[in-house]
Length: 367
Image (tube, rainbow, N blue to C red; front, top):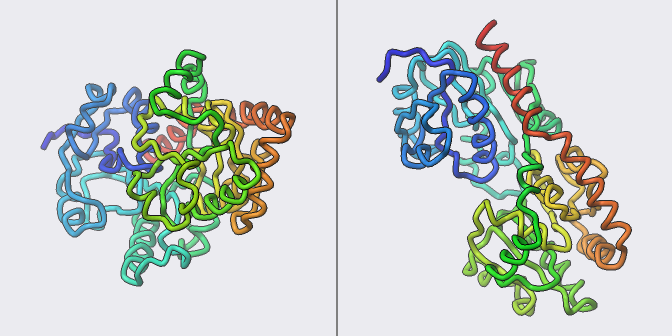
């Protein structure tokens, strides 16, 4: 282990996870430019990124939420001024870092509708509480999540700071030319007119309500389709709600990050029916691609999407159908959503994210 004292060490083991992984990917490049930075994670994965030659990488392949994590993580963290945990699975033991910062994205694992076991819920509550108690600074990604953390966890009046996620809207939009869009449509054999769902089959993502709504919508508008990104075809087949929809529902499988803007841009609209989101990065990605967004009015989504989405009650299938009909029938609504989406993403510019995160880090390192 090096005797160099790093400015910052980051637990980057979750860099390829959805959500938290995106946050880690967004965080590292700017920090690598400004600080002496060390990363813990799968060395082969971390070395594949263009900034890898700017950081020191320490191999740490032990799984999250494991005993191995708690045994090995404290021993492998190099001497640092600050250690950043991008998730609540912090090392409980003593570490070679002067200070700690934790990013708690949400308390999703504590909610009843997820139907997780008592043991898993107990573990999550214990670890989130420990993360708040042991860290010198706690960050989260929205005011909604801040309220949720204070609701479910005893924070002992410790302040929780909000640093909104960042999105590089201009870079995403730079892909969008006619040639690219045509190539993506042909590559994935996309239908001519389709609504888009991006997500998983996790309970809180509420895919079932989107399917029920599309089934009703499709009875009147039989030449429209639904494209689902984030599932494998085998998962698609296992859902009983897909019965009778298979000729109108497309599941292309894995989509690369480079191709996803084309999927958004070719869509009539993103349908985002989630019950629970700590931030809502996917609607912002859609807005960056000039894709109108119809969204659940739950959790952080109104906070993040503001007036740039057409909202529905995620518990009301008819409400989702009405939103889909408006997209098809009213070109003025579509035009307005695209314009407002372009304005809304400016609130989450990557440079603003970099600036705000650096401010919180500097307060710890230099205080």
